[in-house]
Amino acid sequence: MTQLRIADAAELLGVSDDTVRRMVESKRLAAHPDDSGRLVVAGAQVAALAQELARPAHVGPVADESARNRMCGLVTAVTKDKVMAQVELQCGPFRVVSLMSREAVDDLGLEVGSVAVASIKSTNVVIGVPQ
Image (cartoon, rainbow, N blue to C red; front, side):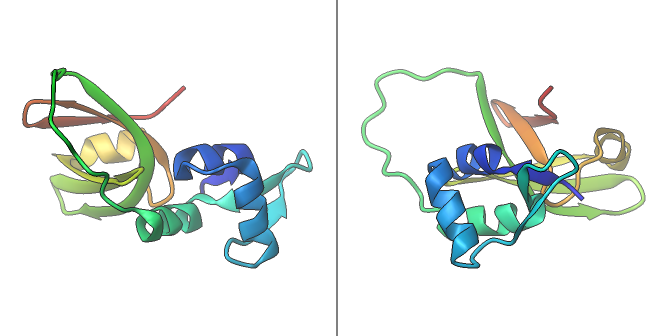
């Protein structure tokens, strides 16, 4: 299962490290030390919290747009059949859904709580994993 350090969870949730620590202290998130002694939280738990905290941002007038957009987020759901798969990401306030081959999902190791990057161009959403 994916484990995230406090700083990584904070960045993905769009809050400070201290906010995540307070969430741990108040039992909103469960944390435990990893093999190196650093505090980590379960990626799946952070993904659920990201969905809970997500609020659509107000979109005002758009002056300019780019055809290339990349959003880092957490996998919140993976639905697979024999050939195809649907992957849902929570990227800050945005929910992004991608349809791809089951083989691609398996090769990327995508599961609830995994960190992934959605690259969006036109109607295609391509999912990758950060280095």
